Length: 153
Picture 1 (cartoon, rainbow, N blue to C red):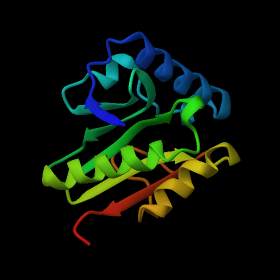
Picture 2 (picture 1 turned 180 degrees about the horizontal axis):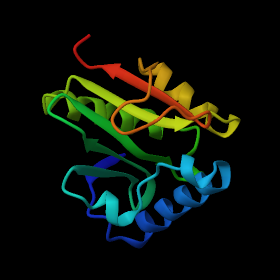
Picture 3 (picture 1 turned 135 degrees about the horizontal axis):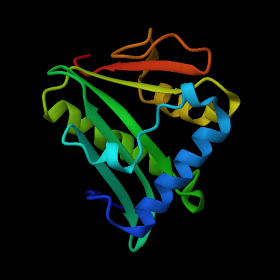
Picture 4 (picture 1 turned 180 degrees about the vertical axis):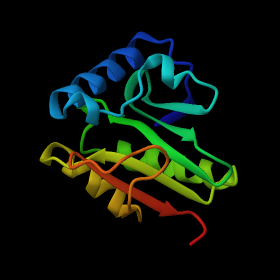
């Protein structure tokens, strides 16, 4: 697997992100969907990666700079053909390492609270994330689960 910082110009990446947005909008009310669109992912405060198995896109993920100590994980998605093969764990570990190298002390995220997101919550828990109150501009939401990882521990 090859993980690269991606410019979001490729068709495969754009299609995977569209599938991500479609699923998010199908599982939660609009006010509870916090996935970033293509334009938002290209903002200077976001670093976006794609992970490839030779020429096949296996997944993607990003972090958004919130402040000097905290970043937020965004747009974690594994391509359907690669589910259950450890792609998300590999990419998440890469993101955690990157965050530590860039001086962040904490990584936080928002994911859904519905059954659809059970694998996501399990992934983050496996990597040491714990549930936390809403952070940044988030508000309490029964459709959201907030998680954080202390990078100094």
